[in-house]
Length: 122
Image 1: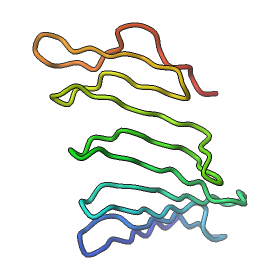
Image 2: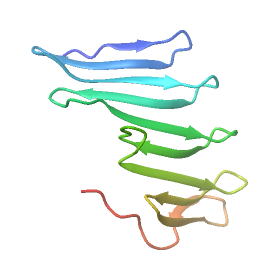
Image 3: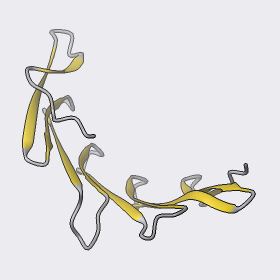
């Protein structure tokens, strides 16, 4: 098995491929914005016709605020959004409309759900 990597001049990963004796098994390409945040991953797998596209959105202070998984025709299979407090602690995670609130302890450490959990994926 071979796994070549491709990087740009800023040392950001652009592509990775896993190749076996019969060709490429899986590969991914990555896109970045002008401030070095990942914006998209496009994956292809042997035996799967269409590429899998995941999209990442960040706020002005570089926090990940949204991930849209397996986007096809602009519609994601899974849509996850993150909300943070003023010091950057995750407060809410919303997945496909279901939300879970998070809290931190008195040392400003945590990220544990207050109650409930997001539904598990099969």
